[in-house]
Image 1: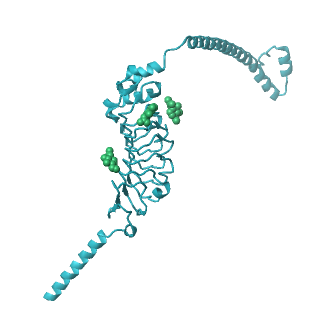
Image 2: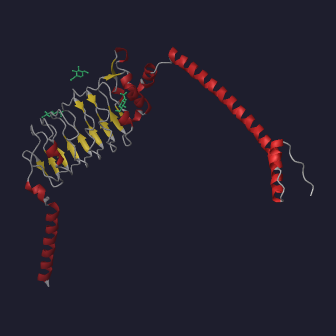
Image 3: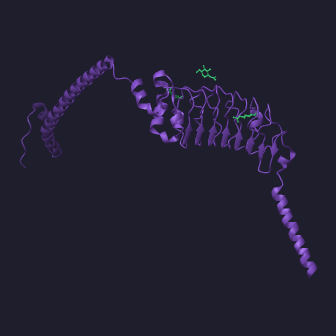
Length: 325
Ligand SMILES: *[C@@H]1O[C@H](CO)[C@@H](O)[C@H](O)[C@H]1NC(C)=O
Ligand SMILES: *[C@@H]1O[C@H](CO)[C@@H](O)[C@H](O)[C@H]1NC(C)=O
Ligand SMILES: *[C@@H]1O[C@H](CO)[C@@H](O)[C@H](O)[C@H]1NC(C)=O
């Protein structure tokens, strides 16, 4: 009896241990390797921050979900190796020496939710660069001192994007036509850029003026040029730029309106005259038809009874007198 109890307890112990071991044992792919200088854990996180890496790590587990490469000196994100990581959800490449990314860089990362490209040396973001990242919710791309050009359609496919931070770059103008259309976007950081407050940024300023709540550090989002607007907030210049960039109508426009007005007036008059004439003619015709139809009907009646006078009637133009039975 007692031995039985002890055995049962032992079984239970082994079972618990077994379950525990199964739960913490890493997946097969992870056990096959972890990149040098990196730490891989059972949560599919690969941590390679601050290891003075100059190249993208090799031997990454294919199931990696979080990859942290921050604070290294990596100069390139190789599209081929990166796109093997199709389960990647979180990618932190901040504080490296990256200079170029393109549409192919992220071609297969359809689950990526978070991307950090801050503190790098980008100077230009091309069309569709982030196009394949359909799940992307947060994109941080701050503190790239030379980044001055972002293609109008760079973010146009990122319908899930909620937070975009492009503060402290070298951007003077940003075409916001596709950003305005992103349905989930709720936080945009634009501060610390040398904004040029002219017609190029009219749409941006108007957007900031109407949806101020969306903009982080809106008070520090100010013009660098032209000199007379230096230091002014973008969010208070929308209407000013609109009136400057769409000045009142010129003489030619007024002349155009006068000519168009006259043409419309003339055409209207002619049309009214034509319609009036047609109506009068119609009325006359109907009256004449009515006068004529009556006798004809009687002719048809008489035809049925054997006598035909219709031809004579029409030729004479004299309506026949009603026949007495
Ligand atoms: C960037 O990384 C270096 C180490 O590579 C570190 O010394 C520096 O403080 C980091 N800078 C930022 C802004 O995190
Ligand atoms: C920022 O852009 C301006 C031109 O718009 C350029 O003259 C300047 O060198 C750029 N700054 C950096 C740090 O690249
Ligand atoms: C902004 O980009 C869109 C689409 O690329 C283009 O049609 C539009 O003309 C641009 N607006 C300005 C002010 O350049």
